[in-house]
Image 1 (cartoon, one colour):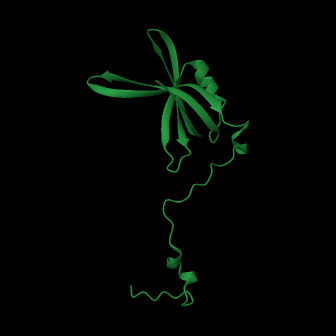
Image 2: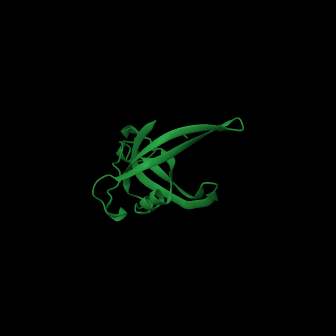
Image 3: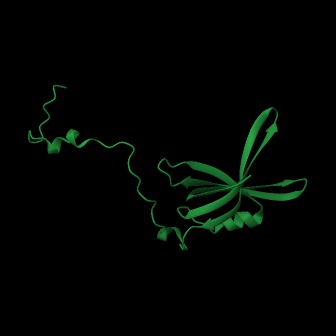
Length: 131
């Protein structure tokens, strides 16, 4: 299953490496924060020295589009899901994070009605509620 997500590169976690029967391996996890009305954070991983080096070229705060695969496996009667990125692209032409525009402001889920604003009352801003 191949999917895509676009969001801000929120955090890069430390590189993990080791030795297996097949040879040396390296892996790095990173977190992407979506830019929706209710932002979500998704932790993903890249495997292999070339993909880790590619992730190193991105800065936290950059807006990226990530293509990834989802895969689940069972171990000791428990299921584990891996979100493995296979392509990371910059969204826009922003060579460094300082130039990345902030995400668009979304409307708040709830805003105070204007009649609750004490500065706009006819009583001169005095709260006449008994509690």
